[in-house]
Amino acid sequence: MSAPRWLAALLQGIIVVAVPVVLFFTPLYAFVTPAFVRHEYAQPHVPAAERFTPEERLRLSDAAVGYLRGSVSREALASLRTAEGETAFLAREVEHLVDVKRVIDAMLLVHGVAAVLGLLSVLALWRIGALARISAGLTTGVLLAGGVIVLVVVSALLDFATFFTAFHQLFFTAGTWIFDYRDTLIQLYPIEFWMDAVWKMGAAIGLEAAIALIVARRLR
Image (cartoon, rainbow, N blue to C red; front, side, top):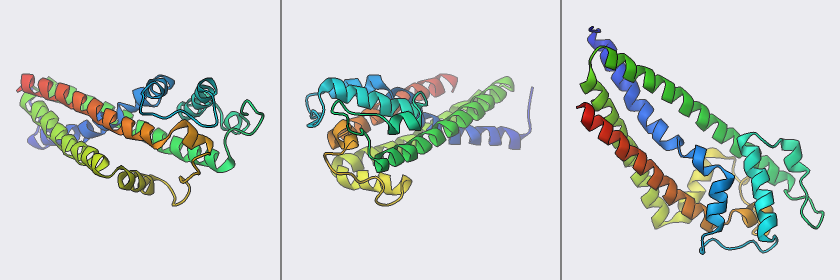
């Protein structure tokens, strides 16, 4: 079975675009979880919270992550109390988590669309026997993703403060993501937490990219 050259090229182009999106956003399913937070809290370079015991820190973090993943409502998050009976999250902290959830939900939506379109394109090219186009699409997509992730990780390693600021300025309104070090969000997720998360996410994407390249070489 054959297909018009323009259609095969279009399907290959969809794969090229879909691959970086899938590679970048797939790790979110593992990283935005209570299990990853517990992993980070166990690292010796991630400082303990000054305001909370380890048990309470986990309880509050589980609620924040649960909200981001949809298992905890905004109202429940806003009404959460500390062991001393204080409101756990300030109103502006809740609003920031609302913004974060909006960004994550958008990323996961784009991830799902890209994964479906990419898979359908692979199947269509497979059906017409255009394995070389699948291989080329995967390879180009991985190289694009690799270039971006190397730039991100190197930038984070060279000057994490600048990288962290630029990232938040890209996705959030100015000033809405800046908190005092004693605010709950900073107590739960200090800068060392995010420094660790960035390079580990880069490593996860690198592993995905390596697998995709192996598949592309076998198809070629």
